[in-house]
Length: 55
Image (cartoon, rainbow, N blue to C red; front, side):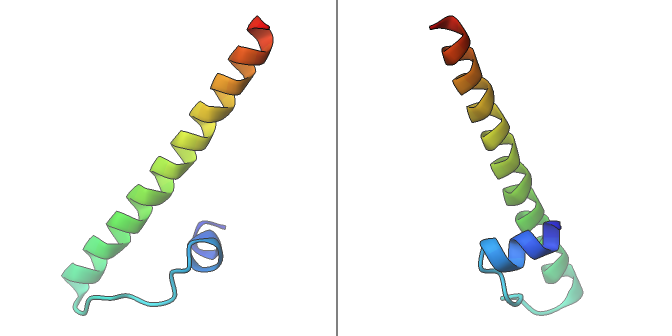
């Protein structure tokens, strides 16, 4: 699901850099971005639930 999300939802079709070290770095950046977006979504959901519970 992660690679499908990167390809379909994020528009990642091919690597921009060449060579194994550079591609590894690019995969790392993609993974970091994916995880940060997941964390932001979880935090936003918690904030909404907190506001709804307080109201």
